Amino acid sequence: MSKPSDVDAVLSYLRELQDRLTRALESADGTATFREDAWERPTGGGLASGGLAGGGRTRVLRDGALFEQAGINFSHVTGARLPPAATAQRPELAGRGFEAMGVSLVVHPRNPYVPTSHANIRFFTAARDDAEPVWWFGGGFDLTPYYGFEEDCVHWHRTARAACEPFGPEVHPRFKRWCDDYFFLKHRNEPRGIGGLFFDDLNDWGFERCFAFLRGVGDHYLPAYLPIVARRREMRYGEREREFQLYRRGRYVEFNLVYDRGTLFGLQSGGRTESILMSLPPRVRWEYDWRPEPDSPEARLSTFFLQPRDWL
Image (cartoon, rainbow, N blue to C red; front, side, top):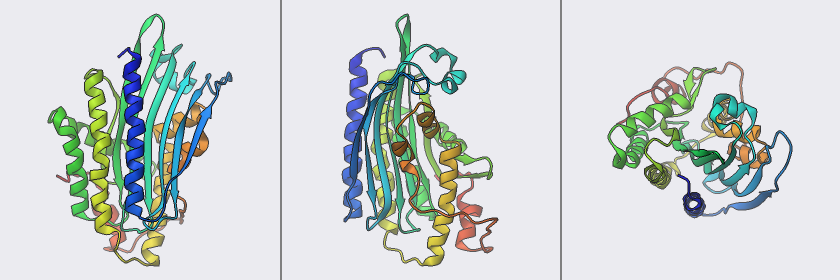
């Protein structure tokens, strides 16, 4: 991967994907639309920013009939150097300028029976005049139910497997397992949700095949999520279900602020804070040492659904 046209092709796909996701989620909600903030960052010279420049389009939907909040962020930033926290783990990146781009999406439905979902696809490249560029793709999608349904879990993972099938039978088990391991709250000793796909540092297939896989993952998010939304959106709920949803959203916040690579990289590299934190839910609660009633639907979330398993 060395031609500017390669980067242009990735940028074009990411912008088109953001537009496609925007239209589909607005159509599913039926009442609300996304507000867009197009932002630019001029080149800066401070150590924290590493000469960071670029921009993006942050789109947020609020108070819809279906979605309490949904955010779809496209960003494309460049920098003269990476922050020390990044080069400490990847010393081959020291002294290189970098370019990072991606689309990140988080959907927080109002109805507790409709799960939260997340998707992210990204591309990173770092260059130096005297060496070949270092590049990789990353991303995936994962599902966070509050009240689980086995048919939804099967559908989600079946669609994830379909995204991987053209690339070999070993790909889905590898990236499904990586997702289970990555979206895990170590301090709680529990997964964030039921998983899906996660991959990072993908460059060992060559640029064209890696890019094709990225597109496959991006294109399978809506077929994975929208049928689940359609099945659950009209289910009746009350204060009990709503309070449990808000409590479990706390786990989502904990993961994003403590472990999420995209959040940490964005904040460490001086990125746009509002865009980085648009993934957080609009309402959430914590309660000290709360325990669900034994054998309740709330307890079953942990005892059955939030357990590592092969849903297929």
